Image (cartoon, rainbow, N blue to C red; front, side, top):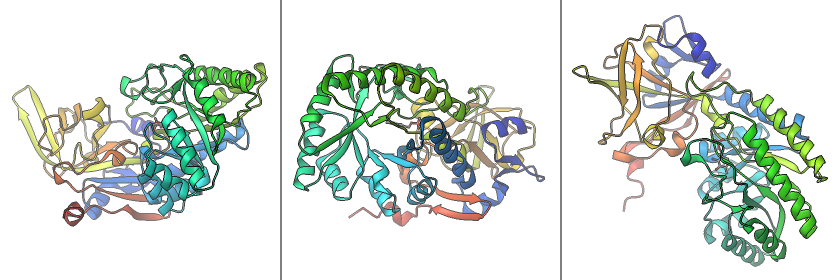
Length: 440
Ligand SMILES: *Cc1c(COP(=O)(O)O)cnc(C)c1O
């Protein structure tokens, strides 16, 4: 047994090993899925996704109040079927580009629940969003504020916005995913006084309706303290702007970032308990400062989708280099999952067709690209694989497909959705013709 059933369950409640010794997701034999749809393949468990959404929607309503709303951070995973699902689950969304917005529009997503993020929205982005009735911009900087005001004016509308504020929190996470500190490329810092200047400018802007503030302190955070600390700073800021400008904050967006278990070494996390604790803290603090409780938003990305997906590959070769290193090569790699190459991210990997066998072979899992750094993971323990085995990487729902590229002209994999109601292709595998679609 490579990973005990308990470990697999811990990472992902709907994964099992079936009677054939095959890994199964939501009851579907992964070896059968690989045979039917080909590899590399993403398999997404729709029921698990609905369950993850419900935890946020219900807990936020229960502890923050009926008007609280979780926004799915689209950058974690984006395709039309996903927007339809999260809309059904009662979530809003945060988007960071006109491309994501276009996808949401295609899916019929209610745009009054869409928040447009990013540190460089172009005039074309702003125009497209306003024309389509976007709910809110989360304004990053002065130039953007002026551009939105002007373009909203041209369209004869008043545009609702939040201002992105940097509270100066370091949640002790990976440097590349820290976004809440003063030197961040995102937002306006309270510490430097810039945040107050932005409020003044927003309040003085003609076609802008300032509704509140946003902060995002980082990703893969397992504790409540960084969120409570950020909320303290933001509520202090909200009290200040009330006193200084008589401005009553309607919305406070606490950002995304609850962590996800990629391996058994990651801490356990209880999202509902975390939300309960943050809510109690926020309510107490608001009362202390005599500010009315704003409508609370959060922006979970990975904690909605990460543990709903696995990636299946077919093993092509096993290379044993003396007793120095073993490589197992698969028919995917950094084009469908660049996270190990980018951040050294940990993943749990197993042989899906031999899931009940003992693991005594230490190896690095290599992708098929012409790139030495194209690895999915190093020092993985597997039964010695052979050509044709099916390899599964677990917890790949977030920042895998959404970061996928066509490097080496590899077509992007398909996403198959499975649920108690059946299976369906949610995103088709790209064809060779697709690869040349834009070539003149
Ligand atoms: C990335 C990001 C999120 C989502 O982060 P997760 O770690 O995927 O939950 C939410 N809000 C903003 C502004 C982000 O940049």
